[in-house]
Length: 272
Picture 1: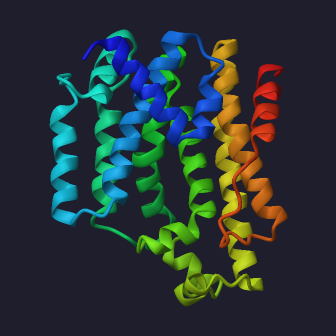
Picture 2: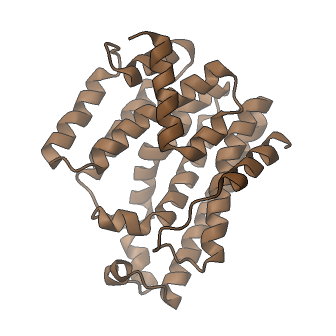
């Protein structure tokens, strides 16, 4: 498969599967846009395996194959595009391997005792995306890039409580559930109680703190890269605002942002 065809495919994957990412990377020059799409498509591949319906041993085998395939091209468009992007930009192999390790962790761990454990997981599945992408943007500030990735994952966890429950997973830390008097039966029932509101308010406050810290990355980026990252952050912030406005009712699956809201967020990021 040609590199051009591979890049076309990862961009299609990004437009189809990740509307927020697609809106963000649209402001980038083509080479950077293609490289970020390649990283996203690889992360999507990991997620699709970890969240799919295959038996766990087969999931693990396929994820281990991704570890081994990271330096290969062959006929796989995602690996072909990623290999070319790694030749053009300093995308660290350890970040890509961390993504796979996060997928493997999802096959073996479905509860987190405390935030320290959860933070370690978020660093793999989302912080690593930030680290993988920051060199494409033209910065070596891996610390803030990782923090921003963790912030976006914390917002995902709040938004996707019901979806994750249906996959058999609870990412909200067990000690915090207990401290706020929230049982897993309440999550299963989709009930918004005062205890649930207090717990999710605490989660949102922490996510916003990580988001503020991670956005210290923006002054270290060129204008178009800062607009891209600012769009990602703005869309996730808007999602969190909407969740808060709904009283933390995240159970009915109607939290997606409209195309108009997304375009306004792109515009605001460009005008920063």
